[in-house]
Image (cartoon, rainbow, N blue to C red):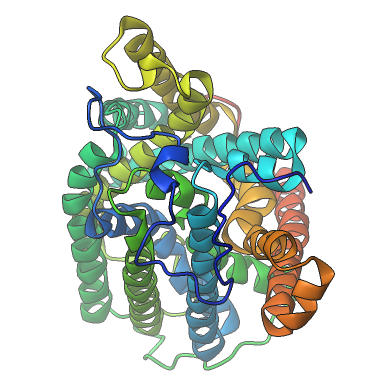
Length: 459
């Protein structure tokens, strides 16, 4: 493990770090420094706005796959899994925030990777963040494509719908600071909540006749089907489909009071877990075991159109947040500690606009040009989101315990947290390996069955 770059001489307790006060020297070591006299000020977010940003990014199109997960494993196991993963994600959020408070120079997962594993760790985790963010942007473009296709009764080529949706996504990702995007996220959150309610009402008023609400408490199934159903809520909390753990460091870095980050995390997880559970259960109970993914597509046409129309702003803002994140990581890497970061310079704005266009353009080309792109999103989520949301958080705690509390003896004295951290690492590894296996099998099956279309096709 490499030496850490910011020395917190107070060596705070790993069990009870005071998150109500930033450690001494935090704002001097933070990537944006002290901004009082800067033209562009990044550290302006309050914790309620951070919570809104998190909810806008997480509670998105991914929740629409959750009812189909309950159809595979049954109502009770599915709800237990959603609630457990929400609680687990809250625990790993706490670990990430504690790590950020001890290492204020960390702006993104790449910076954290440098502390843990040196230059190679920085490059690997930075690359993973960019790839995952671009793929997630593409996933939101596909969600917008589906929504526009349903609303127009399939009157245009699907590529055109994707292109149409890419333009406002790009424009909304252009602001240099997350504060501007946070205000756009307020109506985005309202829209996805209302869309979910409309979807549940539509399902309740139009239940599947031969289903009769005789839902299955538990369902016997095979490993592949079961794990696919498990990955839906896993990645709903990881960012693929509707958690922004890979964005946590970037969001906290732009907070006015980073010590309030845990308040945002509590708000996010309590809301997301509750909404996921209610939406998944209600939709599954009324639409039955053959509910589609996305579930809005199982509703009668007028209800499907209403739900998709209301959800569109959320798909758009979530995509903007992902592409903004990818561009921000590269931008900070290029201009950290330079005047172009904080001043309105031609080079600074030119580079920023180029990066935004590049990230959105890459997402668009992947979404329309790669027939198996939906599967590749799952592959990227298995490779990276499994670690960003779950596994690597354990490594952060173990690293700090080793550095601050006497190496192996520090781990032994804090055996409970050490055990939980190792279990977190093991969970990330399992989700990564099993997720890759299932996704690759799905790709092979799709090619064998002839389901894969040609690149850049309208179908």
